[in-house]
Amino acid sequence: MENNYKLRYLSLFFEDANEIASYIRDTLQNPIAAQRLIDDVEKAILGRLQSAESFAKYHSDRERKDSYYTIRVRNFTVFYVVLTEGSTKVMEIRRLLYSRRDFNQFV
Image (cartoon, rainbow, N blue to C red; front, side, top):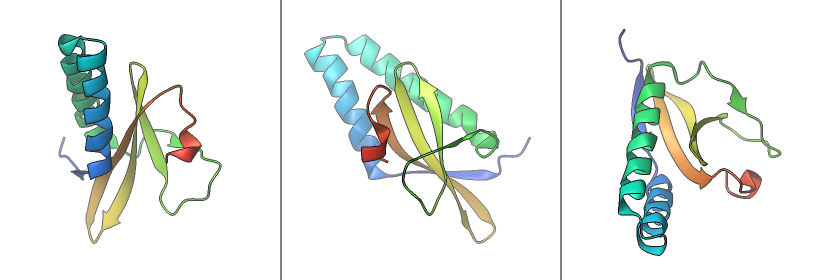
C-alpha cells in the first residue's frame, strides 16, 4: 500500500518529547525507559502514517481551524492534524503530552 501522507513535526513536539525523556532519564533515573518511550512514540506515529484520517477526531472545547487526532502511547498522548497542501496531505505532529493533563489548555 502506498503512503498517502507526508510526515512533519513541529518543534513544540520535540520540546515536549525532550522534556519527558529528560524527566524519565534524569529525575527518575531510568534511561532505558526513556529511550523505550521515545521508540514507542515513533513506532506509533509511523504506524498511523498510512491512514492518518481514519481514526476518531479529538473533540475540544475550543473551535479550531484544523481537526486534531490523537495517538495513545502508554501514559502519553500524541496530537496531530492532517493538512492539505496542494495535492499532498501532511500529517503534522504537534504535541506529546502526559495523558492525565487538561489538554484544552495545551492544544
